[in-house]
Each structure stands twice: as C-alpha cells, then as structure tokens.
Image (cartoon, rainbow, N blue to C red):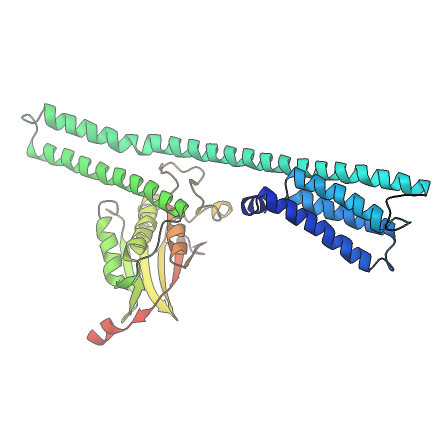
Length: 359
C-alpha cells in the first residue's frame, strides 16, 4: 500500500495532503474542544502524525509534526489564541509533545523504510531462487534434446553411407522427438513470459470440443504410446466460444503431464460437458495421484513434486492455471478416492447448438 501512495503522489502533493490532514483533525478537535481536554487533543494529533508517517516521505511528515505542535499550542493550551504558556506543567507537556511528535514521525518513517528494504530483499532472494531453479531445470531440459539432436545429426553426416535405412529412420525420429521436446520447453518459457506481462488476450471463436480434444491427443501420440486415453464427450454437445489456442495448450499440458507421471497400467480420461453457461473440461487418470501435502502447490511457478525423477521446469501447470484465469475460468485439482487425480476446468462461455441441429 505504501508503494501505491508513493507512485501516485508527488512530493508536492504529499506536503499538501499531510498538512491538510493535520488542519482537518485540528479543526474537528477545536469544534469539540468543549468536550475534549487539550491533553487528549495532543494524543489525537500524535496519532495523526503517525498516520502521515505511514504513507508519506520524511520531510512532509516533519512539517506536519511541527505544524501540529504549533496548532495545539495556539488553539488548545490555555491561554488560547496565544503562543504564551504560563503553566510550568504545560510548558513541560508542550516540550515533550514537540519532541515526541518529531521522534515518532522519524521512527515511524524509519520503520516503514526498513520494512520496504526487507520486502525488496525478500523479493530479490525469491527472484534469485526462481532464477536458479529455472537455470537448473533448463540446464537439463534443454541440454538433453540439444545433445540428442547434435549426436544424431553428427552420425548422419559422418556415417551416412554406412547406416542402414532403419538406422537413418531411427536417428531422424530421435531428432524429431528431441526437436518437439525443445520446442515445448521454449513455448513454456514464452507462455510464462506472456502471462507475467499480462499480454495474453483471449481470441474467442466457435470451437468444437470433440475436434479440439482429438487434435491435442494426436499431437501427443508419441508421448502417449502405451498409455490408453479414453475420450468421454457428452452427446449433442454444443459449440463453445473459446480461444482454441489457449484451451488446446491447457489440455496439451495436462495430458502430457499425466502421460509422463502415471504408471504404465493407468488410463487417462478426458471429458467435456456443458453446465449452465460454462464448458467443463475434465482430465483424470487412474495413477497414484498427488501427495496431499503438495496438492496446493502444483500450480506454483517452477514447482516440482518432491521425489520426482522425471525432470521438467515446473512451468506446465502454472501456465495451465494462468491461461484458464486469462479466460475467466477456474481449475481445481483433486485426488480421487479410488486412486488417481482429476483436473476440473470451468470456463464461462457462449453456447451454440448449430452442430446439434446438423446431426
């Protein structure tokens, strides 16, 4: 909140606001002076100076502290409307007020500055931690496909006349697979950059979810080898006005994530249905599910499950959440009682039953 005030108000406006606040509080206290003792007014003015110190720079706060002391002396300490103070106790009280107001203003400002510096330090540490996490992840995730591509191309160039057609096909297949893996990691980084900058603006058009889901599954055919995928789409499902690219990327990341982590015997199921004015997409599996203590962290940027041995940058699920929220939707993750995990996506959208009427 402090940063908000500093960004919004120039130093000149801070002077005006801090002085105005002291004048306003003093005026209210003066109107109620018949009911409020002048010593109580001193406490109220000290609180006002403290409030100024919480939001404004040190110079406007010190001016407000001095002004509050002058106003308290002139309008409230007997005899009123004069700067003369006849009572020794009041002279001591005024002196103490003046010192306390200045010290209070300075200390409150210093505390706020310390909190700001501490916040910046923590933010810097978190940024450095995220950077190291990303660097460590990428050093493996990018080096592996790059090394595979270099090794395969070297073999093709150096031993082209000695390799059989099958060997050549296998090397080309490895290059293709590694290129797709490399492309996926780069896309994840670019997508995260777009999310961080707030650049993503959904481009909605009428989408057939049946076509979209099978398109994503087809893109993942190499990753899904040996992993059965069951598609359960409600009959006569309408068209939905969605961003095809964003929803496609969301499903791609969820299904890819499931294909990597679930055991061989597990089944992936993708569902699509319409509930009121929302499209509901579900990706579930019959694997081992997520550790209960980590289930609330899986959408965090760069977070990877403990004891996970499959690598990854920890960006896939955070991008999923970011894309869903960019479309005004929600996503939740739950473990199923019988085993496995289920991601449920709800996106508000327009519906069209044109495809239903055609059937």
